[in-house]
Image (cartoon, rainbow, N blue to C red):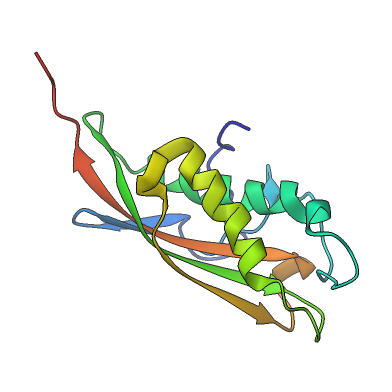
Length: 147
């Protein structure tokens, strides 16, 4: 999966904000061109594979929003922290497995730099009844020209 287009804000906010060499994203749901690709609670009796595409799209949206704020000679140096909000039914317990799918997505594109600290939190609801929302903080570094 390539990174999605820069996410379309669903309210009065920006997809990402840069402060020095840090980029903080808004919470990103699995939206493509502003439309949720999946909705509803994640249930304990349904395999996580059923939400994998949605998790990866939410992760892609955070990466796209971050990349848009890079200058030409910069790259994402490291994922600092990731917060994963899961629209989960009450007895859901696989929060870490959901977060692992997002972490794996970042590793695909950033290598070991894609692994940061994280929190996986079950919530009663999310905007638009999205199954997942991810917020990311990354650090930026200058690309060194090797001659």
